[in-house]
Image 1 (cartoon, helix red, strand yellow):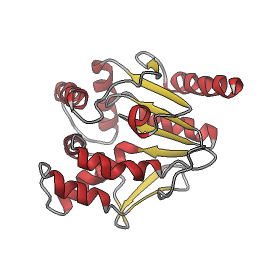
Image 2: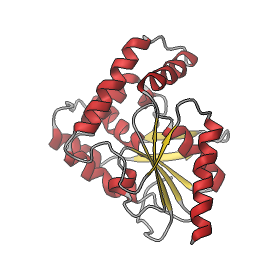
Image 3: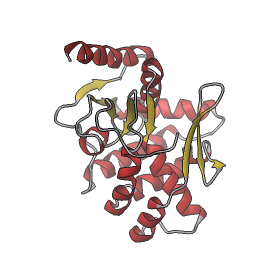
Image 4: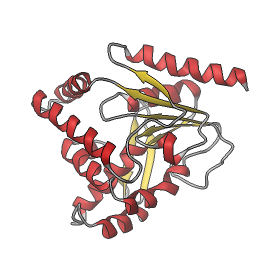
Amino acid sequence: MTAGAQDPKTPVVAIDGPVGSGKGTIARRVATSLGWHLLDSGALYRLVALASVKRGVAETEEEDLAALASDLSVEFETDQSGDERIFLDGEDVTSDIRSEECGRVASAVASFSGVRAALLEIQRGFRKKPGLVADGRDMGSTVFPNAFLKVYLTASAEERAKRRHKQLKDKGIDVSLPALSRDIVDRDRRDSERTVAPLRPAADARLLDSSGQSIDEVTQTVLDWVAELEKGN
């Protein structure tokens, strides 16, 4: 799917939270269950990070990064297995943007107001009928402030590090668990302390701690909230 002009009447479920909270997995499952579109906003920042490396733009050059972000050629597709495929300039970069280094650079470039402004309308353009499930750091607080449902999904830093460690091990990537824990704590601090769209729950968000809960349990909670709100309208 490519972005376009948004439909402000289309319902949005915004799922925000820190790195490793499981928001991407939950958002994908909720979108599939509802038959709605999906926006993985973190992928957009990772795409800016990857593009900056490919084009030799330093992660400290805000003006150049903002120009790069405003000119991204991006496509999101779903393959025959139902998995998301992400393309940058026509190249499948689905695996490339999930590296730890790409995540680190993405966290750095996301602190720039110019980059966030460049991506704002791109993100809003994913709001199309019948509905959108958007996950990120500021979906409910900044990008879709009038979202139908706002969820702030979190978990302890220790559990988030263990989840990420397992994901990487399953992919055959050997990463130190203590190093992952330190990286998560650092990224939490950087995301929450930035001056532009800092990581924090929207005032009207529903808090959901996924610590000790299965993916199915968390997904069902969000779906129950959607059903509750739909019934009330």
